[in-house]
Length: 110
Length: 115
Image 1 (spheres, each protein chain N blue to C red):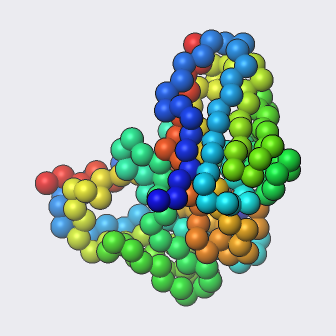
Image 2: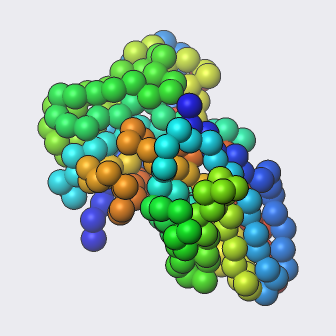
């Protein structure tokens, strides 16, 4: 079946540091890939997505590239802010329903 | 502003009670989903529905049932609540789209504690 593996957190960074959160997946076909973000006390919000190989999703300074050869969709941001502190979920879609990773908590310190 | 609304933010119930979690969306979405969120486990799919009166089991349906009598409303039912069902429950909806171009819209969640 489908599965998503994310790096364990928490990830603690200083403001303006470079962020990478690793995500790899297992799927039978060609899924769509997503990153969702959950700010404290809120539901999940769609951050970015990519629907086919080599697509790059981007939003709010975050980027992720769909790499079919390495089955990966790593999330990156060049300069994080305190307001980026949240839990980030990688997910894949293949016909049925979204399959989520376990989530990675990001803490950004001033 | 389009919304998925979950009726309760916090809920405390006793072991053995029948519990109803309600979810309503105003986007005319065909698809609706129930997940539970637990630390270290991410979100796990309980049930989903592609249309009125239609339901499909997710990955962890045991101890749960659902009802979808109207397009906008999707209810999760805990037949006899147990302490291992203490969790955050998230409802979501989406359009029927082969690539899920617009993703899911999530509600704010219901934190259920079973004592």
